[in-house]
Amino acid sequence: MVKRSLHIEYFEFETCNGLSEELKGLVAEADSNLKNAYAPYSNFKVSAVCKLSNGEVIKGTNQENGAYPSGLCAERVAIFAAKSQFPDENVDKIVITTAQSSTEPVSPCGACRQVLIEYEITQNQPIELTIKSGDSKVWQFKSIGDILPFAFDGEFLKEKG
Ligand code: THU
Image (tube, rainbow, N blue to C red; front, top):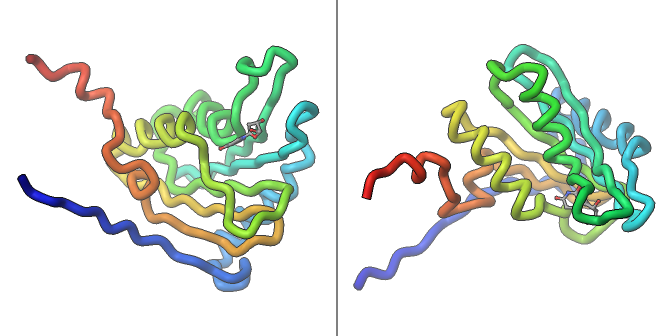
C-alpha cells in the first residue's frame, strides 16, 4: 500500500487591485452582467465570463425555472454559449462572480466543474479560473483540474476492458 497525497496551488488576492488589467476588466464585465441573472427562486445571482483564444468575451448568468432542475448555472450557460458559437476556439479564462458577498469566493458546483474540465481536456490547454463573490477576496486557479482532481474523462469510455 502506498499513501499518496495531492497538493493544490491557488492564488489569493485581497481585492481586485492585484489582478492584471485584463482580469480586472473581465471581473468588471462579470459583475456588470449580474443584473441579467434570472434567479427569482434562489435570489442568488451568478455571472460567468469566458475569454476565448480569438479575444471574444462570452458572458452568461444563472437561469432558473419554476421546474427547478430545468434551470442552469451561469458557468454552463457561458461556456455552452461560447462553444456553440466558437467550437474551435480555446477557452483561455473563465471569471465567475456572485452578487452576494461571502467570506470566501463561491466556487463552481460539481456539475459545472465536470463540464469545464471536459473542455479543458479536449483543448489540451488549462482554463484559468478566477472567482469572486460580492466584495470578497479573489481566488485564482491556473487550471480547472485544480478544483476537480480525479475527474471523469470521457476518454475512459473508449478504453477497452
Ligand atoms: N449557481 C450557479 O450559477 N453556479 C454555481 O456554480 C452554483 C450555483 C446558481 C444555480 C442557482 O440558480 C443558484 O445559483 C442557487 O443554487
